[in-house]
Structures are given as structure tokens and as C-alpha cells.
Length: 400
Ligand SMILES: Cc1cc2nc3c(=O)[nH]c(=O)nc-3n(C[C@H](O)[C@H](O)[C@H](O)COP(=O)(O)OP(=O)(O)OC[C@H]3O[C@@H](n4cnc5c(N)ncnc54)[C@H](O)[C@@H]3O)c2cc1C
Image (cartoon, rainbow, N blue to C red; front, top):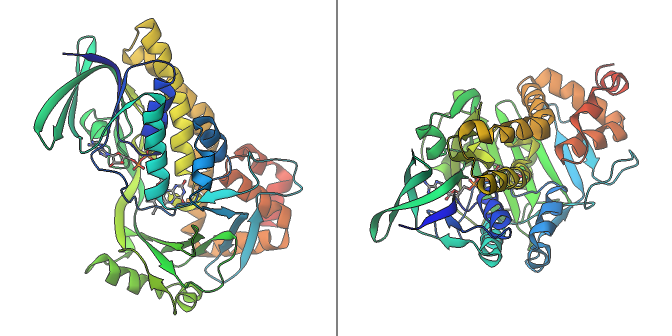
């Protein structure tokens, strides 16, 4: 049986980018995807400005631009009391993003482009191929897959699991943990949402929040995220969506004349992370490694940035033929170094969203200090380090 250098499980942003980065270095890579492209993925579909750097590196920016994405200039955050501020990516704070905007486009389009790029870089993309189990055997890993032709076994020197939020690989290898508040999301596309501009919006309510983002061609992505413990998941997702939207008066008013252009898709519950993203001959990347709250909206960036990190370490391991867990541990350290600040930011924002009085106060403070709002959105946009928000002068602006 052929032993490949690498098998990448899942052709979302993390898997496709990882396959590209390894294949372009000359490794023999198979990218396994259970779906067939184009496939939907419930998501608010906004990319932080820093994601554009990695899209450039993958050589897909021009292709994406031909698909007519929206260019978001920033984010507007609305608190339960109705206070709001707009944070802009281009500002006088001295930090510059790779682009002055965040791209927003349907995942059916984005993910197909990224999977195509993996193929162009030399990876073999196998669609309709569901991974059932990964076993670590001697010097290689064995991957049992179900295809329309039945069950097959593939082998590789290293397996990179990018199989998303409910990663079967992470579960089987006992690498993931569940924690924090369990949330569910309902996502759809609508036309005719009133008063949309070139900024994305986050409306926070008593039991969750709604994101509104233009994604090109007159479409608005509408994503409601709700606390599972405080939500009644009764009936089909569309009924559930219609009930929840009434908790956000501004959104309800602006959607009065809207038309839903795609089925309402439900996803969750989510809130999980891993303590380690490595095991013998296996590495996790993207949501398979960590998934937190989508409020700060950087999951796609983390998936792409994680792909850079995992590909560097996997290439090193393959070249030195050292693929045991202890040889791969440097990747866990890389992740802590690169994402550690952002994990803290996510936790703090998520905690504030759960405390309406605190959130109302912070938003009203940021409305009075536009530069402070721009800094906050820049951290969410991945081009300003979280540590910038810890300066006493900044904290003072939020609390005083
Ligand atoms: C409601 C919501 C809104 C969000 N909004 C945003 C946003 O606006 N901006 C942002 O940056 N992030 C957002 N995110 C997060 C973002 O969607 C994820 O972080 C991102 O998709 C992670 O990419 P990934 O490649 O790790 O996983 P995924 O995109 O989930 O891809 C995983 C792939 O693996 C495949 N797969 C799974 N299991 C198997 C298997 N056993 N065998 C073969 N293939 C398999 C799946 O079919 C899929 O194609 C949001 C998430 C949610 C839930």
C-alpha cells in the first residue's frame, strides 16, 4: 500500500490551506473531504483583514475578487441598551492591517476556491470521502475512510486533522475538551435587509447576539447565536430563527421587508478546546484544535494562520522523520505563542457579552472614545496585539 507523506482530513479553510502549504513544498498530500464542493458551511462569512495576507500567500485573492465579495470597513457593535459604536480598520492609532478592509463572501464560494488552490498546489483532493477512524500504527498512521465504493484504508507518515468543530479525530484520540457556555447558531442569507452599509454589525441581546454582514451581490448574512441553556430548540430551524429574531428589535425592524434566500441552518452546540493539538503522528488544526465564540469573528483567520504553523512543523517532522508526539510538541507551543493573547480576548469579550450591564457600559464608553473602539476592532481583526488593550490608559477609558 502507498504510504503518503501527509493526509489532511477536511477541506475547510484550515485543511485546504495546510494541504496547499505542504504540497507546494513537494510532499505527497491527500486532502480528504466528506462533502462535495460547493458545499455550505454555517458561518457569518466575514474574514478579518489579516486573513487577506494568507489568501495572498495562497495566490487566491484575484480569484476571490472576481466573485464580488463585500469589503467591510469595520464593525458596528450594538449593546442590549441600544448604545453602539463603530470600530474602523483604518484609523489613526498607528497599526496597519494587511488590507484596510475585511472580505465577506459566502462560504460555498470561499471554500471551493481554497480547495481548488490545494489541488493547484499539487495535493490530491478526494471528495465524498468520510474519515471514520485514524489509528497510529508503528511508523505511520492508518486512516479508515468511507467512500461511495465502500470502506478503504489509507496510510500516511503524518495525519493532520482539520475536520472542524466536532472533530471525530480529536474525539477518538481523546484530545478535545468541552467547556464554557454552550451555544447554538442559526444562519441564513437574506435580501432586502434595510439600511445595510459597508460595516458588519453585531447586535447583542439578552440571550445571545445577531451578526449582520453584507456578503456581496445584495445578500446579507444573518447569524443568530444563542445560549443553549436559555433557548428552546423547538421546531425546525426557520421557526426557531423567527422566534429569536424578535429579541433584537432593531434587527426585526430592518428585516421586516427581507426575503430569506437560503434555508436557515443550525449549528452547535459549540464551546470546546484542546489542551494539546498533537499526538503520535497526528496534529490538529483550525476548529478541530480550538473553537470558541464566533463573536470576535476570527475563526477563518485562525484556521489559515494555524495552517501556516502546522505546515511548518509537519514539514520539519517529515524531513527529520520524527513524528512522535514529543517531536511535534513545538506546534502546541507555537499555537500558544501566536493565539494566546487572542484566546484571552475572546474569553473576556464572551464574558462581557453575558453580562448586559457590563457590556452596555463598555459600548457606551467606546462610543465616546472612537480611537478606543478602533483599537478593539483591530484586535478582533487580528492586526493589533491583545496586549495593546491592557495599557492602563486604555483600561481607564473603558471603566471610568
Ligand atoms: C455561527 C458561526 C459564525 C461564524 N462566523 C465567522 C465569521 O464571520 N468569521 C470567521 O472568521 N469565522 C467565523 N466562524 C468560525 C468559522 O466558521 C470556523 O472557525 C472555520 O470554518 C474553521 O475552519 P476549519 O477548516 O477548521 O473547519 P470547517 O470550516 O468546519 O471545515 C471542516 C471540514 O471538514 C470536513 N469534515 C468533517 N468531518 C470529516 C470527516 N470525518 N471526514 C472528512 N471530512 C470531514 C467538513 O465537511 C468540512 O468541510 C463562525 C462559526 C459559526 C458557528
